[in-house]
Image (cartoon, rainbow over all chains, first blue to last red; front, side, top):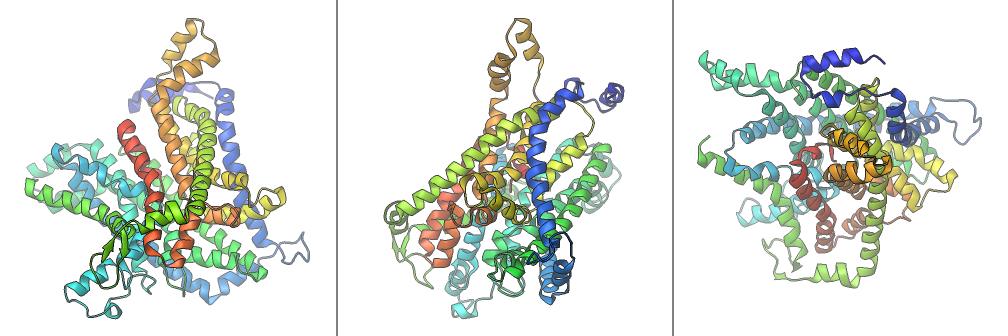
Length: 310
Length: 264
């Protein structure tokens, strides 16, 4: 390994020299190896074994030959297409709503005075809350006999629980989307804030001197600055909401199901023939997500090269 | 921004974040609360009595099981994560970007896909439906996460102190115990806490690999939601969310809340 380019990049990027210290590859190898080994064996192994099981004949008529039968069954199942459409819709909608609200929240937070600094702590709370807890709370709030239904009845907006709109286990996935939006806003906001804190206000002041209005300053200065990080954060959120189980399991409807719920339903079916199809669906979900992650990593790296993210 | 606007926005953020917890709290302290009453007709501790009294044995067993799984997972994550975090944070070497991608994938690819694949293998190894099997599947996503936190911790760590200790003739083992660990301690605790939290929140991977034998708190909570006893489900939810607040407070204290961005 050649230490020279890293030294050069240290000077160029101005990063602290001690983090760029060079050491022999074998030393770092020994330090990183156990962690990498565990991840590659358990995670990589899990995916590869899943792939093998979803490509295997079942029952094992001819264990050495692989078949695309299960994938073909999944892909040709009309339920799969319905689940996929619903899942894409829910993931895209919750990501988009969370992104818009996060931009607004980040812009507000950055300009809050010191007195309101505690809001910077409060808004992060949903990050650590388990998905299951917010799903339970959403049931208590939005179900036909939930808190909001009682509130609506009290104010005479509805006359019985039956006339309260269906907001959970519903066709449009409203409960799922709300739970995801609540949970994911802090993550996207933090990603935007880290960019905003590093860029400073000089460009905005230049914009103001050039008589750019607030919208123009946002559209042509702020938005381009935050867009790589925002894009990366959105892809991560999309990937997450595309494959998570708890919220759609508790808040989703019975038909069509969200894709992860459908995959698990097939996997745990008493009919063992459905099991490889459940695993195949899991592999398809993982495939979509891996593509999204690789894309987001590319975006972050592009942003880093431009110096927008530290 | 004008103070009044700041006030309105702060209140809106607090209300949005707080409302779910308020609703859970009210429900857990309601003895009798019928639709369409806005407030419980009778407040009380029935649900909490049930959680810690009547069904105490079952719920406590799940609580202990959850804590054990999460603590063991967190300890292993940190033990393996410290050397990796040190290498990634302190040294520049080839393949770092690749390692970063390899570690990012398990954090975001849903446990569903991995757990379904591992299950058959774990059955053959005899670790399915066991404590060890559940810890192993949790490790798949907890370990990469703690490596990321420790990576950040070690990028702010100055190894010169180790050189000074060594020049005074201190052995390498003692350098680790007396210099490196104390200096990075808050960061290590945060890595452990978040690893704990990730494992603590797991539902599906525990269900698939544990096969119903390893009953953690989320597994019990799902069963309770099915039973329809809302006050009890609310009380268990509050117990379930408590460690999240501890972790958040701790990270805010020691890391300015920066490293929690990846927690799911």
